[in-house]
Amino acid sequence: MWLSSSSVGRKFIMAITGCVLVLFVTFHCLMNTIAICWPNAYNTICMFLGANWYALVASAGLAVFILIHIIDAFVLTVQNRRARGSERYLISKTPKGVEWSSKNMLVLGIVILAFLVVHLIQFWAKMQLQEIRGIEGAIPATAGTLFLQEAFGNNWTWIVYIVGFIALWFHMNHGFWSMFQSVGWDSTVWIPRLKCIAAWWTSIVVALFIAQCIVFTVKAHQGYYLTDENLRTQYKVMVSPAFDDFFGAGVSQQIAAMPFEQYEEAVRGQYGQMSNPQAQVYFAQDPKFPAMLEFLEHQVALLDYLHSKDEAQPVEEISIEAVQGGQDEATPAQHQH
Ligand code: HEM
Image (cartoon, rainbow, N blue to C red; front, top):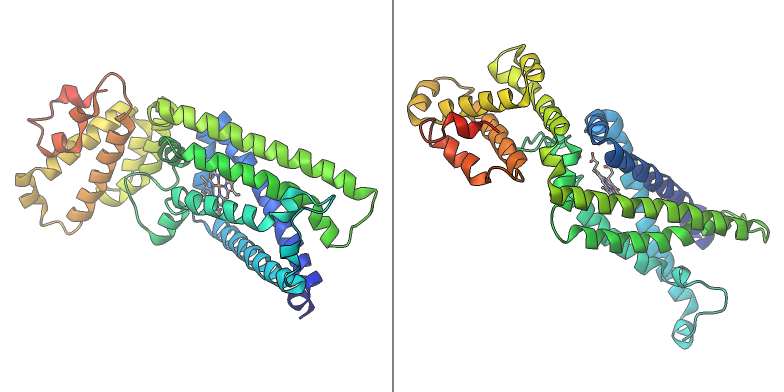
């Protein structure tokens, strides 16, 4: 087939897949900007997308484009090196007019790929993949802002991201205009114009990513995504539907309507009762009991996590162990925040 067998065909594939990736990165950057301005709206979008069929189709399509782009890049590089033979070792200086990024597209791509692996482990694997696998942990898979907290709350994420963004700037800036050249739009009038558009487009996208990285890092270190009242209320609403499965229809509505503090007291109280060894003998007859207990354990762990950056009260006082020890050890006053 011409597309995959000829060098021109392969460059065409690079251009088409590259174009899709530029559009994805731009869209992704705009979506993240919502998390800066309206974190609750960002979570709502995460809930809307999640592992719904339309999000899965889009993710699968994107993965195919990324894979083709990477494989094609390696094949083209090998073909080019073979075609030039030993000549490339004789050239020690970059020819005039050939930019630095054009000579280093493969290396830049590999840096972006390394960034992407870290990034997908931090977000996609804990969000969409968890939903696909049906695994429920303490953090709801659609609570995007809690994963921002997790990722940017450590001291090294921002460094990895800034390195990734710099590589992205050079790679995307060059790829943007050269994809037009690859599909035959090689006009001397338009190439300078496209270079200018590429520089602006890429700079705006990367500047926005850097701004996001700074804002998320600062807010995560302040514990904003854990302590903000509106976000806490939203996390409570996110987990509420599962209560219907264990405690009867309509419970989720009650939970959604109650203040966060009241919800917290109810969950900790229920967990305290059910994890008490005497109560366990009684509840053991219920086949749903282990799943119920595990579910409540996750909710208590989530509550502990949300309090982990509270200034007024050290986290030790509200740890799971305190609750597991029974009501007598964890006084009602300790459950109020
Ligand atoms: C501050 C910067 C960024 C943040 C906060 C961020 C955030 C996220 C989040 C929350 C997800 C998970 C969505 C989900 O699975 O529901 C995600 C997925 C993803 N991100 Fe980023 N992202 C950033 C930068 C980037 C950059 C620069 C790239 C590409 C070079 C990128 C590529 C991807 C890809 C390929 C996915 C998987 C998309 C899918 O599942 O369909 N991200 N990102």
